Amino acid sequence: MIHFLNLIRWKNLLIIALTQYLIKYALLLPFRESHGVFITLSDFNFFLLVLATLCIAAGGYVINDIHDIETDKINKPNQLIINKHITDKTATTLFMVLNIVGVGIGFYLANGIGKSGFFAIFFIASALLYIYSTSLKQIAVVGNVVVSIVVALSIILVGIFELVPAMNANNKTVQTTFINIIKDYAVFAFMINLVREMVKDIEDIDGDHNAGIQTLPVLLGRARANKIVFILSLVPIFSVTYYVITYLFKQQLVVGYFLILVIAPLIYVSIKLFNAETKAHYKHISLILKIVMLTGMLSLLLYNFILK
Image (cartoon, rainbow, N blue to C red; front, side):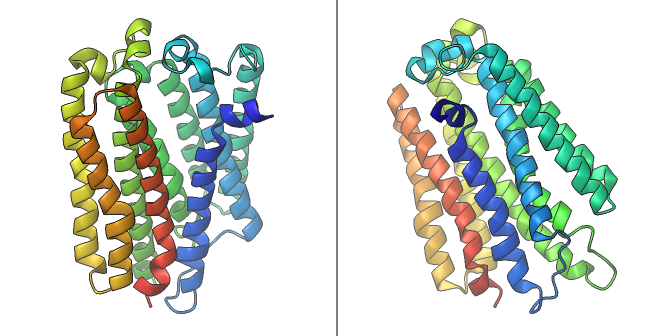
């Protein structure tokens, strides 16, 4: 059971589920009466939305591991799961089941809210993760961007399903305001994930090189790739700082939260990147970025102070 959970990256799935639940129950529901926010999904249907998202994400992790067997023998020999604890055939079947369930639930939900076209989001996300694992990850930066888009999509999905169907002429301004807040979080997730994916590419340069995968570090070398990722790591620092100064500056508690738990760790990441050399360095940086992703999403709990 533990090998199955590790294969689908259960910790990452928990962060996705937590983020989606925070958006609904910390950002949207508390402001139904005070701000006139209209939401669409019942508690059960929202659970199905989260489940569909997790199934497609889990399927993406499985297919990625199936196609990473050779590189993982070099990059993560102690963490190998496919053909060591779970057979290739079982993993492929699991990938197919997860995607059928995820896309199927998406089809049911889209039709249930009278927006059948929304079903395409689940299908596109599933297809992108498959294409990424089979071909796009071999193209420098493109694969990193695609994965980061899918991560951002898992966040904006809540706004699409909860707010868009309930939008009308009377509440358009309020609905749009909250969609924009969700969009800002999706952009944040995209930026952090993109930096993290590129850090992981530097960490995995040896296995990727042997497998002929043309990642940025393989093409340019570790030192040059490191400089590019360092410059890229400055973007979320300036973006979050600008956001805090522009929208949150009057809320001291909120400013303190972002400074200590989001901006400071991002500055730490940039400093560490500037001097990073070993695989252990990049592994540490990747972990800090995952924590920043979590603390960034937990800031959704502060909107009771921001929008009071």
